[in-house]
Each structure stands twice: as structure tokens, then as C-alpha cells.
Amino acid sequence: MNSTIIIAGMVALIALLLILGAPIKPLRFLAQGSVKLVIGVLFLFFFNVFGASVGLHLPINIYTALITGFLGIPGLASLAAIHIFVF
Image (tube, rainbow, N blue to C red; front, side, top):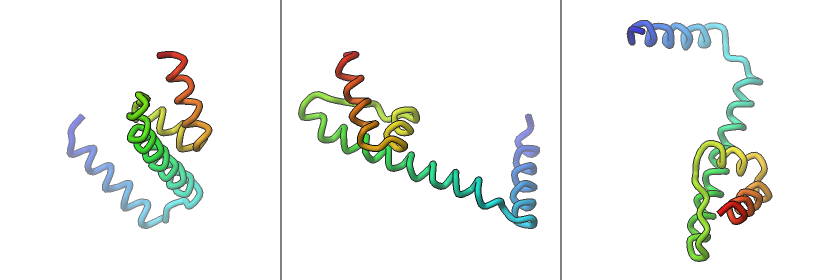
């Protein structure tokens, strides 16, 4: 697909949203989800920093970040427990 068509489509979508207005509920849902994703990444980062002293390491990817972000500390603890039992 031609990149000019993709860029023109994106510009048209942005112009349409500016003219008609963006729906608030889906954007609020996406914003809350992205904030939880960032919180999950931060939890995993600090867990890896402090867990390195005892030999624990959880990979930071989209799945572990989503689990940790939406479930919080219990989600992080369950991921650590699964990691210990599997490896």
C-alpha cells in the first residue's frame, strides 16, 4: 500500500475528529489503560532491580505489563510465583 494513501487517511481521520469532536468515553478508556500499562512497566522495572539480588527476573513485555498494571502488586506476586515454579 502506498504511504501517501496511509498518510492522507490519517490526516483525514484527524480532521474528522477535530470537526466532529472525539467521543469522550473510548478516549478515557484508552487513557486509563495506557496509564495502567505504564504503572505495570514501572512495577516490573523496580521488581527486576530489587529482584536481581536474589536471582529473580521477570521479562518486561506487553503481557506481563498488562497483568501487573491491571492486577497491581498481587499480579506481580503471581507472576513471580509462576516464574519460580516454572524455572
